[in-house]
Length: 140
Image 1: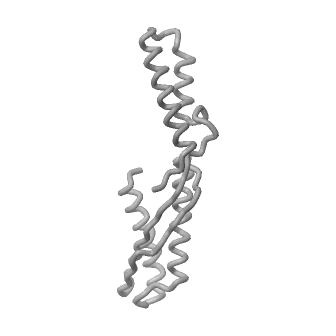
Image 2 (image 1 turned 30 degrees about the horizontal axis):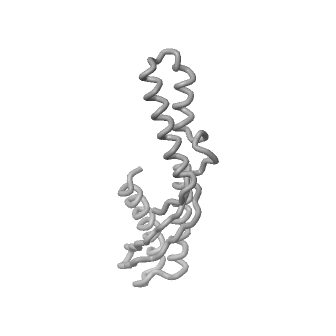
Image 3 (image 1 turned 180 degrees about the vertical axis):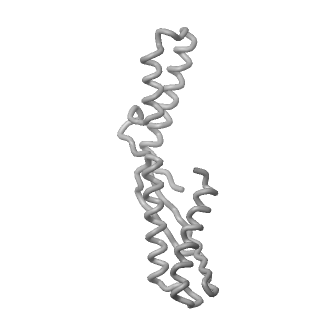
């Protein structure tokens, strides 16, 4: 999922939730309880998204940037940051590498020497990159 689609989904979630809250509360500013509820919902979404991407969530920071309330319309913008790492014990556990290894096991006899070398080189590149992602914290 692209970053813009994720941002749009999160914004839509916040606006819908804010709309429901605003229908009961006509204040100009959102209450701290409402802000905390929105932050919790956003945090839950980030956890689910992180799991779907096969990442291990190490830390999440969610802070309110701005808020508006006008009648039944509510808008809240949050800055989100998460620290994560690829959630595999070793590179060979990742589906991308498992599939390539299975292909080699099932088709090695059908490939030319040049094809074997190219496939093995590709597998080694994947292994190195995955190991780097497994051992290095990422921030986004």
